[in-house]
Length: 317
Image (cartoon, rainbow, N blue to C red):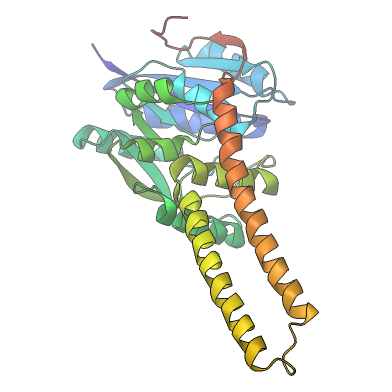
């Protein structure tokens, strides 16, 4: 009996990209006969004809299935849901904006077969997208890697192949706002990478606003590391020690030069602003962790599905 692989694709207003994406995937899969494939789209309440086109494709290709959400749950939640939904020997996560080439699928499968790695990530060696944005992302991943307790994958959208063992484990440990690629690394699964050059988005407009990118970046850090909390502790101890030293210097100077030395409003104001800024920064970091803990404790579902069709599943509902 052939093993199975599910290709999992999140979509939001991607009608103009889906036709080319499907044809490229179909062409790739023609040359891979060792597996039974499913192509699962997740429509995150698109405002164009994305879902209608998926249903149209489904009529001519029995490999296609879809998940339709009742509302827009955001990229993070919808992407995690579609990756974890199908039951197969491995699931492949692929974006629908054509920046990540489906032509890499054979290489991903080959490396997954030939090694003992449970996840093979496709990572961007370079990109044709905005150079400043790509450079900023590279800096972020370097910072994330430094902060994380485990080795972290860099410069990836999550595109890659995930073994069934990983999918099963993630289902058990997932929360309502997961950082999947960070969790894979943090849990300790063995992974490796293949590289590619990312293309420009072919059509449509990315829904990844600056606020989303910042939010997603913070999510990655608080999911993968406790070091920011430790840094706050060390920062507090350091500033406390410096404040004692500074106070002693000021007091001794005042005693020695009683009539010449004045504390000065400016010096006091600057010192107060420094400590106030440090405290607010520390509270902000603590607040992010508390907010994350609160969100996990509420145990919201990843998404609420309107309908699901032709998604391979052995899970008990």
